[in-house]
Amino acid sequence: MAFDPTVRIQQDDFDIKSEIEALTAGQGNTGAVVTFSGLCRDEDGTLSALELEHYPGMAESEIRRIAVEAADRWPLGGVTVIHRVGKIRPGENIVLVAATSKHRQAAFDGAHFIMDFLKSDAPFWKREIARDGRSGSWVDAKDRDNDALKRWR
Amino acid sequence: MVKMVYFAWVRERIGKSEEVIDLPPSVETVADLLSHLSRLGDNYALALDEPDVIRVAIDQEHRQHDASIGHAREIALFPPMTGG
Image (cartoon, one colour):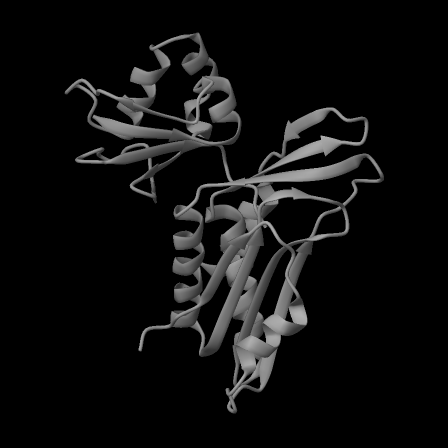
């Protein structure tokens, strides 16, 4: 059977513990779970919220493509990726990447790979809403995010 | 006829999130499309002022600017992505 990652895009928050339980339930050969979660910063107290926009359909299919590619490169047991959209306040979750494997290195590498490519290839855009109520600017893509991909070539 | 969809500041500068347009036969590649659009009005010219920055998806798959448009049903234009 083809590798079938769990991919969800949602406004609501997620619960990391229950996502791990869902990913590992009945998987007796799983010896490692690596999770990455990305949070909304307050940018030294200046940010009121982020507004996350996405390209419905393509966002899901890109994340799925990246997760399947990770599973081709490392022996992963399962992958869950959840990305929130809409308004997200400082301290709240934005994204979860969880990967399981028999031994830890594949789960570490798989989760890292998925997160790096999600940042550069999955169609999401962040806009900052400042504390003074002004709808601020669109966040610029960072060169370091592109540099991060070189590790995987 | 092709459906165009726009996101983030590309959407804001063009002033709409989607539209259906007719493409002249001279528009063969993504780069041709961007220069064609930028001649449609000041809003398009502003949005596509730096064409190298614009990312393009054809039928929801990333494509380079030298890619052929072919029989695309949906073409999306957007800035570099900032998710995660």
